[in-house]
Image (tube, rainbow, N blue to C red):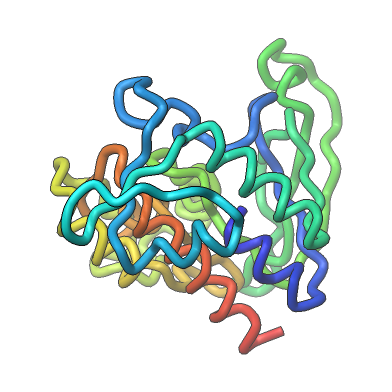
Length: 220
């Protein structure tokens, strides 16, 4: 949503597809459903951009209400011009000469019911996998181009054990193009390139969204 907000704000056509009915992944529950998220100081400006209130917890660490954060992110992204379709699953990707050109989509209830309903194909200049730990889109691409991802092994490296401080930095470093036309952001970036998971600390993910938007704006 952060990436979509900055892209839409810059006048680009952006669509987000969400598999579930609700938007925002695991941020709703904060840490162990205490409805609080933690961000390090460099990411506070992102929350302020979206109108999310922050409270200083200790040096370099701030907390925010998780429900307020997701609600504000969603509202501001839509108001900036991003379109959100929920209950949509990615069945496949469109590829032309070793480049991702779009997505093959179907309704999540169709997938859950195991029905044989023809999907829809949607073209896009770029795709951003923001599916978190699952790396849903990257996994689809990996099956088609085994060994050709832009990672050390050419494959999904897999997420390492929790190390919040290290993960904050690596989430940002790992936000990049993993295959022509396909970028990864947030925890999908760490899972793809082998970074650690981070728990309810969301600053790196917020900054990751801003970074991938800036990278795409250079190319669009």
